[in-house]
Image (cartoon, rainbow, N blue to C red):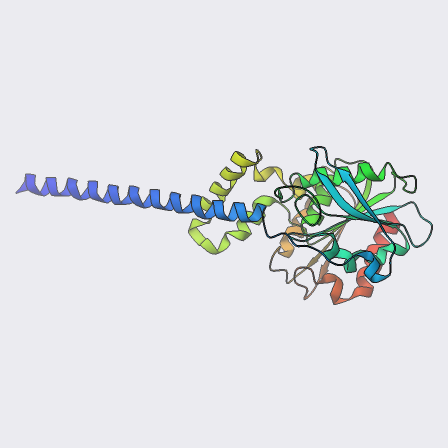
Length: 303
């Protein structure tokens, strides 16, 4: 009876190990499928076609285009300043939007500065087969600055950037590497792409880590970069460019803590304006007068 009992015990252990192995394989397979779907849809969200132009708001503009280092044609609008000025602000839109989406948010700057709106790669009218959530979009910002340097009505040493969400993150990352950018205003930026993945998969609880790991795997395979390389947080630690952070304390998409991380790490002059009661994209609309005064004051101080 003892040998029979031992044999049954071994069979039970082998059976349990088999079940455990099958469960692990199923979880890994599920994580790979779910993460690939999330990865693919994040890189190729539905393209939004904008219909508003500055002319709809009574502003004259010039339709412009310029090429990125990797050969993509980006489309934009150049608005000469209301008053004679060679200082220029580049306006960067969020995800998954286009340049027209930030018109009403940024046009108040027009009286004092030239404005350049443009579509990131893949979005709006710009070329590109996919977005990279901030990685190659830094090259888009570099291309915008190079374009401004060709204009006689722009002082290439007096360029600022104002970006929302993804645009804010790109502005922070680009500022450290582009000497022509003298100051940045970032509304609701993320601190790291790792953090965004963590936020995206948070609802999956204990399965969150396998999903993040497999999403990073797809990124390395198809885009040749790691999420950890996309980090406004790290950029702020190595940049002395003046930075104004604006973030709503009720932001459900990119929590306020993301801007707080950047604020605490920033090497250069930095301010954090916490807008109480504001969700993602609502800070400007909570109190336009205060918002305009804060932003204009910051640009006047450093640009």
